[in-house]
Amino acid sequence: MPDCIFCKIVAREIPSQLVYEDTDVVAFNDQNPRAPLHALVVPRRHIARLADLDDAALAGKLALAATKVAKDAGHGESFRLVVNNGAGSGQSVFHLHFHVLGGRPFSWPPG
Ligand code: 5GP
Ligand code: ZN
Image (cartoon, rainbow, N blue to C red; front, top):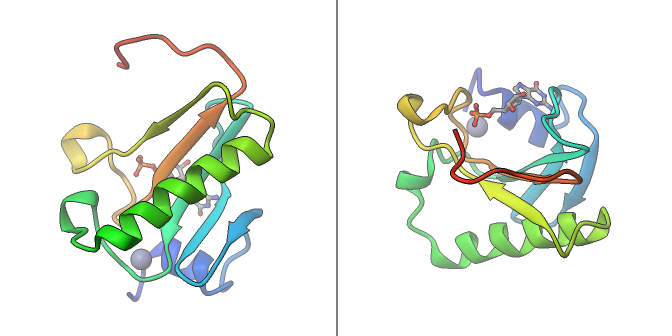
């Protein structure tokens, strides 16, 4: 997708710190981390938002990759996954991504 920043990261057209990749999924550190661990897990193919995801296998791969990222960073016992869907929820990049956050306490409910 032209002009999609995460498509460009997946294509290595702009740099990022990759923490995981496989044939369908890429994960990289957030450029503005909100926790000691803050990675973004994205599908390689462009899907704008969670509400547009209709591939159950890919959904599972994203969840498993997110868990692996947390475990590999040493936060397998306490981490948080966040998906913002739509501008009203806080989504600012319209390429589906799971935020993986860890390494500090988290309050509930989220803001
Ligand atoms: P959203 O607000 O859409 O849920 O989250 C988008 C996230 O992408 C934000 O946490 C933001 O810091 C991150 N982000 C935006 N542009 C870039 C970029 O070019 N590189 C990286 N590594 N993260 C980015
Ligand atoms: Zn994209």
